[in-house]
View 1 (cartoon, rainbow over the protein chains, first blue to last red):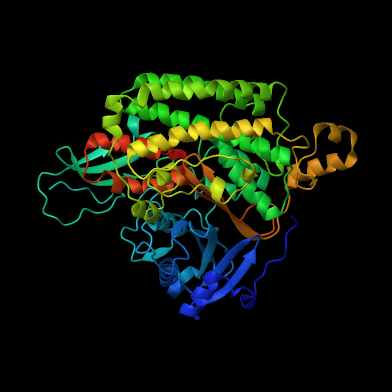
View 2 (cartoon, rainbow over the protein chains, first blue to last red; view 1 turned 180 degrees about the vertical axis):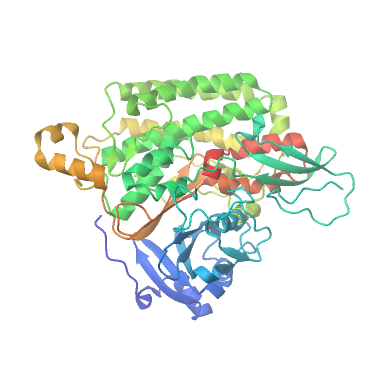
Length: 163
Length: 405
């Protein structure tokens, strides 16, 4: 299957149930959308991510948090893009919510109150990317030693470490 | 009141006035934590008040290393994540990379991938069964399981030259067509294996001590399982009928017929029963793959991405050029991001790859099932006895390599 060009026009994607639900709930929360390689990504404004997750969960569109991770687009700003991979067991469908974060303000609300499984994922991102999650019950390093300096998965952190 | 010092990377103790509690370290060098897992237990006598897993002892920065490698060089790194089923990890990575590239894989390669992935599931479950029983005091099962696992390791060695770190699946297909005598070995194993499962069950399923140690222990409700991100046999044992192989098929799994075992009990026994049934179903799938194996090439026709055959390199100029270019400069991948999830023996194994259009991935993230499943251990064990922790750890079947990455 040759690659089809990505659809990035929100108007063409707004009929998708997840996007329709989010737009009906709060049209200021959706910053954009992308349909690429059979995967749907929805860009959500940072302030609304927890409520957006809760809303999708309460509407029955999503019931499971598969994965929560981040990519560093350094030196571009905003450099961090969080990716929330959500799954619906009933509808057999995945949605990716994305949140952009700037380097000097890498703070976002924790979704542990929606899915407790986010606990370890958010701790991992705090440890390896230095992203702060407000309202997380126990935000401490998980992989690296407690006294480690720096955040290894950031792009400006050398692969072989600081010598 | 006992307390932990601040350097411990676990949650602070609540300000309760509980007297007579004790902090107990289990691991990182404990035989039944299945690797370097440290558990901090707050106990009152034999009863567990709180349990906190402390991980990271095996962190090797694989995700960071991937960013410095060409796409094809990442494959051997994925072997080392979940070392009990390396080919399943290979499969997940190559599927994600192929999705990024928009490649089509020949059916023969897909069916061999399915066959090997199911054999890996069997060998991984055999390690689980052996160590789980060993933890609970049944030593002979361990020896029986490793006898069959040895046969499987020989099969992997035959096909890839390695017993464990196989790297046999490549972006675009397989490294090589399987050697002569390979399919006969697989057939011999599958024919023999059915009665071997009965043998394990004879030793365990009716065993009074084993039943007493497992039944009703470490219960996990369906709501907790979903909230805590549990996947795989542990999720199915809690009553969710969900298997990515059937519900979101990948790699041609839609062509195979198999049952997905579930249970409503949610205890250690239910997880045991689900995995034993999965051994039978995996054998069934591997058998179907072997019997219906299509003929044809085992590599996709994409010379800029897939290494040419050795023979072609010696006779064709273009093949030699492509080989040189792929090995020295890698191949570029169109920008984008994909998340590919597959059903590993432990649950949902997912690879999230971001490409920026160069020959090296910008970000490779592994969603490892053990990492999420481990979070459920606290819920399973609190309020129970220390001996039950051993049963609970065995029942979620964690591999520390993929937890810490």
